[in-house]
Length: 457
Image (cartoon, rainbow, N blue to C red):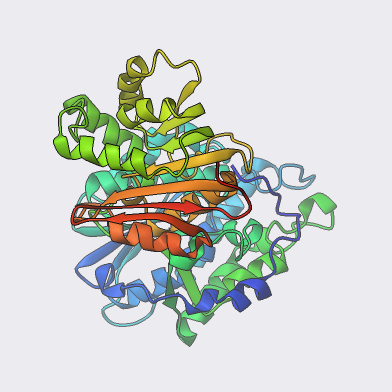
C-alpha cells in the first residue's frame, strides 16, 4: 500500500502533461459504448466516479449506453475531525451531492441511455471487509447483456479504491466482462518517470459539452471541493492542485478486454490448475522440458552465484538445479498449491526459501542490488504490459552490479493472456542491460542480460 496523505503537495499536473499523459492511445469506445452495451461504474466514495469517469459516463449515455453506478460508501469519513459535521451528517450531504452530480452527467438528447445509481452504505475505509455485499451488487447489476465494469484502479493507493478495484478485476475475469480502471490518487503520489505503468493505458477524449458536464458534476461535490466551515479541520479534501488532474480534456483508463487475464487472478487461476493437474506442463516427464532446462543451466555465464531469485518457480524442478549453483535461492510463485509441491523437492537445501507472492506488486523483501541472478522463466506473458514493465524495473533494482537477468519464454500463442513470448522479451530491450547470451529456436527464446558495473567470475 502506498503511503501518502491528501495534504502533501503531490505530483504537479504540469509534470504529467509534459510526460505526455494527454497523448495516450484512444480507447476503443465501440467495445463498451452503444445501445447494445451497458456500463456498471463502481465508486468507493461519492465523487470517485465523477473525478475518474464522468466523461465516460456522459459520452456513453449520449451513445445510448445504459449506465448503472454503484457507490459503496457514503464517504462519511472524509473529514474525521470536523467540529461542525458528524459522519452521519456528512453521509447525507454526500449522497445528495452524488445525485446532483449524476444529474449533471445525464444528457438531454434523443436516444440517450438511462442512468441509474445505488448506494450500498458500507463503512468508509473498510471495503476490504465487505466484499460479499459488493460482489452481490455487482453480480445483480451485470446479470444481463454485454457489460463493461468500470472501477477504481486496483493500485490507486487508497485502501477502499484498491479493495474495490481488485474485486472488480476478479469478477470481470470470472464473468467474462471487460474492465476499465480509473486512477484517482495515483496522479497525486505517482511520478511519470518512476511509475511508468500509465504509459500502457488508454485515453478517452472529451469534447466541450462533456468537459463542461464534468466540471459541473465536480462542483456538485461541494463538501469535498469547498470548505465545510472556517475551521482548519473542515478544509477541502480535494485541493485545487489535486483537481487539476481532473480538468484535462481526456480521461485515462487501464483497459482489460473481455477474456483476458493479468496478475489479479493469478493465485486462483494457477491454484486451480495445479489442483487439477499437479504437473500441468509435464516438467518431470517431458523431453522438451528436460532439454530446455539443460540449455538454461548451460547458458548461465557463471558456474556459481551468490544470491539467486527465481520468479515463477512452479513445482520447483528448475529450482532444484539452481539451488546447486547458488549460495542462497529465493523461489517465488503465486500458487500456494505449486509451492506445496515444490517444498519436498527442495527439502534438502537449507539455503532455499520458498515464498508465495503475486508479482509484480507483492515484491519479495530483498535489498536493492542484492541479487546476482534473477530468473524470469515462462511467466512474463501472464502479466499485462504495465505489470511486466514494473516487474522488469524491480528486477533491475534488485540486481547487483554485474548481475544477470535470465529470461526464457515459449514463442507460440498463449491463449487468454495479453502478451506472447516475443513481446515479453522485446519489452526488456529498454532496460539498458547488455546481452550476454541469446538462444532462439522455433519453440522458445532464452536471453541472459547483464547489468553494468561488475566483473564476471
